[in-house]
Image (cartoon, rainbow, N blue to C red; front, top):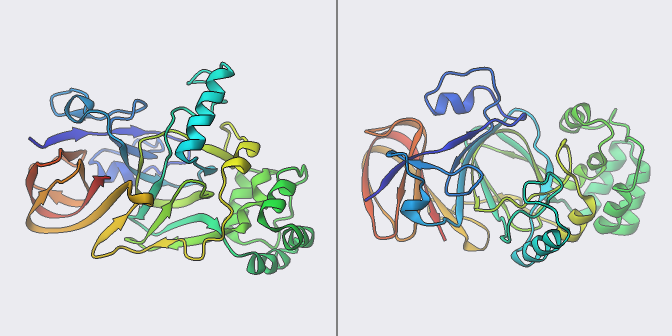
Length: 335
């Protein structure tokens, strides 16, 4: 039988104060409401209507669904492959670093492929732009030394050099988005690296795919984020949390990403490596949803009959449900 569940809100400093309270039918309280988690991840497990852990119904899920809303930039970060995660987890275990130690990079042995679908206008950095156009961009910033280093040594060599610098770059001729980050994180070593990435604007319904090794940062906006159920984050900057630029350079994929936007095919968004898919359901009346794999139904606008604003629906393989109302609903399917 399909289960109605409640998720867990995460109040991180970069969160927005209005979007998630409005979506969940709650009163804004002035606090930053950053993420709403739906899944069995131990950090913030969902509960059924009866108050039982969702894992009692589904077993451990390999997919984690979040709705996030950021008013300030998130950290510049990347995620490992499964092999990198297993080796990193074992290495940190052997070093005696506790799982809850803030210095820990690897909190499990899983990869963390992600996908972000914009619910509002969304701004992000995602993957590396080509070297020639970035060199010209750096010259326009009046970053002549940076432009020369990138031209001579490519992305990998430039990153080695940039993360070793101890001076702050001049942001006077830089675009507003970089100036905003610089104002929040003056002197951050990631400031010299961020311009190498694609600066992406997503309209509602547009998406980005974030496979292992993709260097990225969300800057502002609200989105539906679907990922493997992992907490492995390797940070390069723009945060007060643990930053490990050496590990970033071991994990990061510096392949040029020509088109950071992900296109839906027949209304289906496919996550990296087929780890999950997401279907947008424009609900106007009644629709039957069948689950061939574990499926989470998330309402992000409008109303679904019999479903509270702060609830979602989970279907196990072989189950189906009829949903009625006028709403935008997302069917997130575990691979």
